[in-house]
Amino acid sequence: MRRRLPQIICGLFGLVLLVLYFSSHATAKTLNLLILVEYYQIIFAFTLLVGVVSFVRVNLQSIERGQDRPYRVISLLGLAAMPVTAALWGIGGGSPFMWLFGNVQVPLQSTVFALLAFFVASASYRGFRAHSVPAAVLLVSAVLILLSRSDLGGFVSTYITPVAEWVRNNPSMSARRAILIGIGLGSLTTSLRVILGIERTWLGGESR
Image 1 (cartoon, helix red, strand yellow):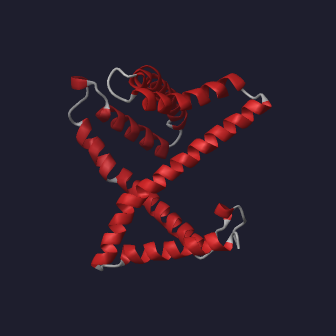
Image 2 (tube, helix red, strand yellow):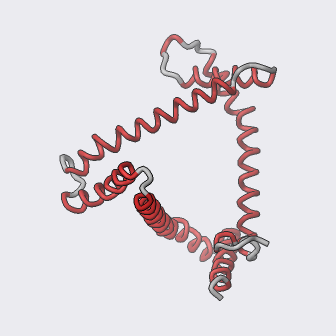
Image 3 (tube, helix red, strand yellow):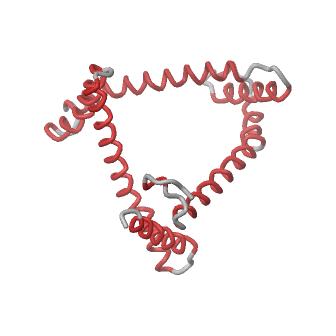
């Protein structure tokens, strides 16, 4: 019963949302809009809470085992510092919260994105080497897109931007649409499996 009840609730709400989405009735449209606007924010808040609880639990377990203890302690202190300073001194200009945001959080985010850009550039260098005709086409397309989006001013020819836009709107769009169709079919299949009770891994069990 501990698993059957969540399955029944999930199935019922899934069917209701499915009917509301495809129904043209005014009440169904109003309820659908209400769910999309209001309840998604509540769900997002709960997912954030689950993420924070999981982050704290994983770090506490690592501290107990002695794994990377200083870094884990700093992570937990950083997690607690922002809400505590916001609750005590507010989030206005000149507050400790804004000082931490501007001098700690923003530089850390910039560092993470810089590292991400470095690894993307490194992977692109290895992947875009023109070993074949398709790889050469991919390399030329990537260079055109990068040049059209770069801030080089008058150094970039005026003919590059229209060509890059054509690449984005035609070959690239075809690939993106295929990926989006695959994502949509995968999401639909997973949703139907959850609604029908076939997919039970989210309850800690195995799917049939």
